[in-house]
Image (cartoon, rainbow, N blue to C red; front, side, top):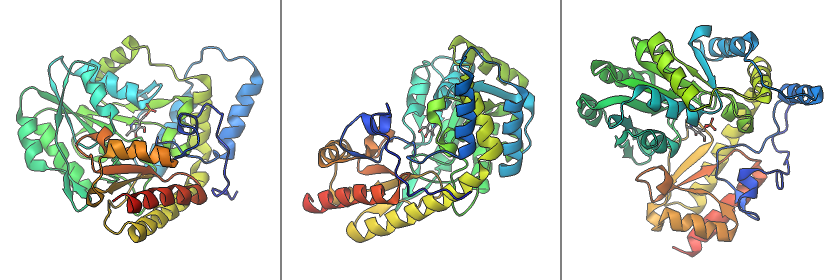
Length: 382
Ligand SMILES: Cc1ncc(COP(=O)(O)O)c(C=O)c1O
């Protein structure tokens, strides 16, 4: 089946946080997509909805098998049924990892700037965030391994959060980078929590699962979800893959204590349909997103020649440094809302107040309207 991602689905008035939080703006902010889901997902949800009874659910074998098959077929990685814990979101998964495995007052290393809930997942569980700022070389980001070595050597440091692919800087970490990271963490017995929610959204090269790096299995918690990949974040379903029994037991306890263990019956059906039947839709989506990415980079480079745009290797979130335009990103976010477009200011993600994050996952027509407002505003208010 050929999907038409140019088709504009009217989401206004559907309780969409993206479209209904600020009316009359083009929303290029929160990370969900404006595209109609794969027909098999829609059909599975219609079938469930027609059943008419929506009681408590179990997670059936087919729920686990769909994930195992996706890991194997899409990412060439073997996982075991018993390693999987299910939950209602990746944020609860991050938070439960800290609650279950980090003592109050201990340190969690975070490679910043990063998705803002990384910070609150740590501090909400009485641990300390240790920033390991990424090195920014003209928009190309890398890990500061020297600083990381020092931070990891602190006996108080027991966990590291990784985002792969990285929201918001758009990196898909290489095997070599991940191997160096693992070596440092293993030397100091640090647990890695690898948030791989964006793993399926990569362009020129596939991502490398942390699970595939030698030696890390016993110190690893991987978080995944079908939500970003298949545009089903509202179904509130995510998973954790934890090979080590003792570690999994601790996280499971924390998930239970936080009461975040049961995906809804719609989430279960949605996940099974997505992983079993969504590959063709995803392949077409990736072509469309890549086109949007190339279009946005060309458009912004022409209209805002002094902007520094980070290469987008993965995710649909473009990271743009507007230092040359003298911006304060919080102020710009507000000004642009008044102009009719909603983007995320970089201030949310750490020390990145001259940056903005632009969500490209919409029809190219809507994207162009949004980018035009941004470019016009900056050129008139420099
Ligand atoms: C890196 C990352 N992790 C987690 C989430 C949120 O996950 P969930 O909605 O499953 O809690 C997002 C959403 O944007 C994200 O970008």
